[in-house]
Image (cartoon, rainbow, N blue to C red; front, top):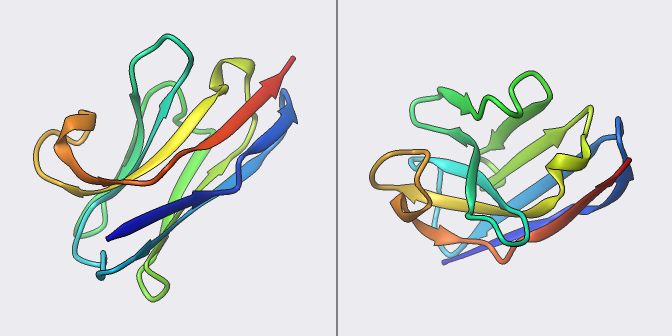
Amino acid sequence: VQLQASGGGSVQAGGSLKLSCAASGRSFSAYALAWFRQAPGQEREFVAVARIPGSTTYANSVKGRFTLSRDNAKNAVYLQMDSLKPEDTAVYYCAGDLRGNYYRASSYTYWGQGTQVTVSS
C-alpha cells in the first residue's frame, strides 16, 4: 500500500496551492483519509480528515481556508489551500486508515512521503 503526495511548492502569503494524494495497492473508499503537517522542530499536527461516510473535519487554524475533497473513483484525496499564511509553511503528509482519534498521527496506518509547502510573507 502506498500513498503518494504531490503539489507542494512556494507561494506568497495570500496565495493558493492544491495538494494531491494518490493511493495505490488497495481501495481507500471505505477508509478515512487525512492531511497532517509538520514544521521544523515541531510535532506533526492534524490539518483535515475526510471520514466515512462523508464527514470532513478541519483544524481550527485552517478552517475556512482549506478544503479537503476525495475522489473514490481515483482513490485520491485533495487539499485545496487558499489564503495561505507564512505559518502554514510545513511538510504536508497524507495519511489513511484511521484507527483511533482522528487528530492523532499515531491513529493512522498508512502515510505518504510528504510534500513541502513554503509560504513567504
